[in-house]
Amino acid sequence: MTFLDELRSVLATLKAQRARAFLTLLGIILGVGTLVVLSSAIEGLGKYMERSMQQAAGEDVINVSRRWWEDETGKAGVPLNRFDSRALESAETLAGAQVLNQFSMRVPWGERWGQNVWVVGTMPRALSFYGLELDKGRFISQGDVYAHTKVAVVGPEALKTLLPHAKDPLGQEIKLKSERFRVIGVTKKKPSFGKGSFRTWDGTIVVPETTFIDRFARSKDLREIVVKATPPAIEQLGIARLAYAVKAIVLGRHHGILNFEVTDPVKNAQSRAVVGLIVGGLEVAIALVCLGVGGINVMNIMLVTVTQRTREIGIRRAVGATQGSIRRQFLTEAAILSGLGGILGVVGGVVVAWGLAGVLNLALGYWPFIFKPLQASIGFGAALLTGIVFGWYPAHRAANLSPIECLRYE
Image (cartoon, rainbow, N blue to C red; front, side, top):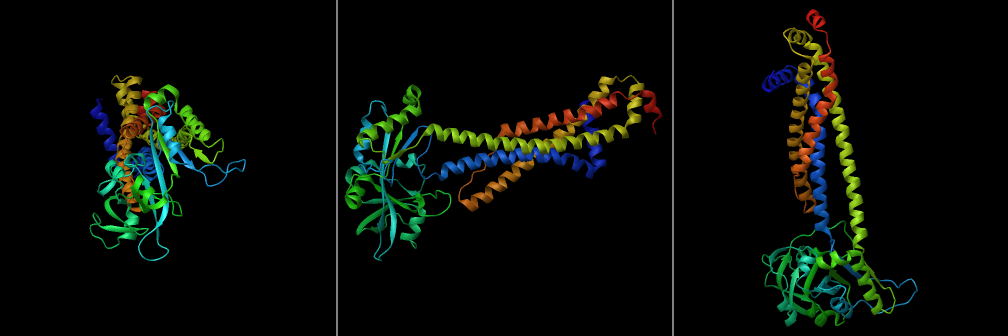
């Protein structure tokens, strides 16, 4: 029998026994579909996590943030300041590293008492450092920093508060601490986990660093310093040693008083890797259970098929078919059956993943649909392998039937 004959035979069996065939394929469909949906959801979750990070993050990023409590010795030191960032910029160990300052404080706005909004003073590269995207207008420029310009880039939540009825906010003025600022841009929504007192970029107004110092803080104190290491420095020293160097430089300037925190990129990367392994293991485990159930169903229908076609097996053996050809025939049918389930699982998984991404995008504000051909190929290959493994016993049983007994079978 040719492959087309085998395919026609399988399709005829499926057509004759639709309900049983559907239940047989259901396990395979669920297994492959689960793999596709979970892989898409995990990738989407990763992108959502990256987008929702309110801090600068990455394998080349080291954050130095202000601690709001004294160090373990109970001593109070000099707050984090611009001289610390200058020391980091000029350090030979961190040669070429980009250093970004962040000033922030709650500032009163409007005319009524008690109305406050978060204002951040920083540099133009904050747009890429913090993963911000513009919805309208432009971001602050280096020229704005040099000229101490009173311009502002507003988050979508802050825009609703400050200019609730503005159709086009660009060019309009907002009043911050008795100072008028011209709106030059609006950032896109940046999702965050939960709601609380923690500052989010959606509810923040960004102004040039120099303007912030002149109009608000009049201080060199910083809330955060972000150090972005260069690839050559990471390759030569490693990110762990660079983070240690950052801590040592700032600690030396603070006379040994640890009133700041430095992120550990290595530990963060290890934590992400562990979470990825756990989630990936659960994904594989669920898919294997579903494929196992589907494999048992394939074995069941193939055993029934062998029983129904016993006389056909006897006739084929009588006209010269070998045990190997009989075994190959039923293995091919099992593979076609499971392969069909794999195709339906991939298609169904893509549809479900697309719909789930759409719902989560509406609910959370951002959730991309990601289709991974590699995962779909693995799922389809696993379905074929499942059919071959679980179809081996029925095929072996069919091949070992006695031709004479098969011809006598009614």
